[in-house]
Image (cartoon, rainbow, N blue to C red; front, side, top):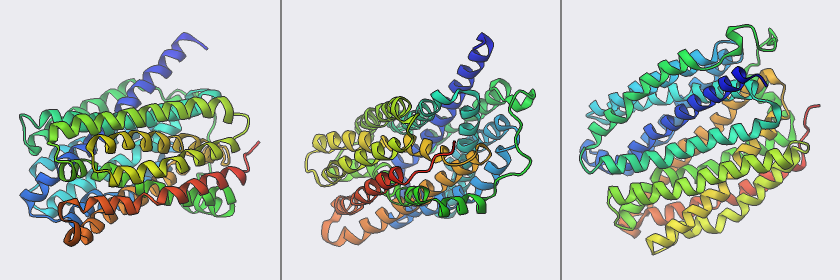
Length: 415
């Protein structure tokens, strides 16, 4: 490997890691301050669920496909740079919202822009890195998302000691515009210099990706997994801060520190372990990835249920670390399993399809259903209503575990 090529790869990976971190920092500011936003804007839990859930997820899914379609043939570093600049501006504009509808518009802008960076980034990285490093690179990016989830909470909690939610939105939003410029100027893009392998003239369509998934038994099981596991995962993430503030009486600084640390411990380590194990054992046998993912999900269920119902905050935190670690083992290997079963020119669209499932099921259904369940249980449980709501949603992990194992059993990797 030439030194210049190696440096370009590492620099590009580093820039896209920063982009991935920022995408979740921007989201987590909202979750930490959502009870303050609820009070100031006069909202209830169902409306909060809409803002964090289906309203975000629907526009995320709608924007992902046309952007990914361009990314399969166009300049991916331009796509990423524009997306990160737009979502950072939308985050900053959230500071000026004075009603549900104004906040909704800002969230839509954030969702639409975030939808494009992920598929373009994975398409670029899986091209510039060799195949035997592919799952590790994917897992590094997923670990970066986890750093954003945990670091965003910790940063927002720390800033809450001096600033209200409006100032914090400005502080975390504006620097992303500069990051977008750096990506445009410094990231590698083989297509810019004619160094990439020729891309077939025919682009993959949304319909073709859906038909490919529908005709492949393994990808159908993956679809079920992606409809179930994110419901639990994102319900825990989107409502975790409110859960610890309401149920365990933590303040924002404590919540940011403890919950952010628990997310970092579970998600970052889980993604890195998943990447190493998948590259070591799943490279020659992609079916292994399904079994590995499924076992992790089945083990995660009792800890997810324990997190929701535990009376002690530190027991809940310990369960949260374990459930996040075990859940996180599935995504990198499952993405690699999907990529092994589709042609190269379909990978960005496949990534967008995976993001659509995760967004609609996790952010959309998980965040929204948790909010409605919390409102449903409020007459009986009062401020503890999030406990039964999250306990109910933890059962989705069992279905996801079975689906992952079946996806591995029925996989048909391409030669």
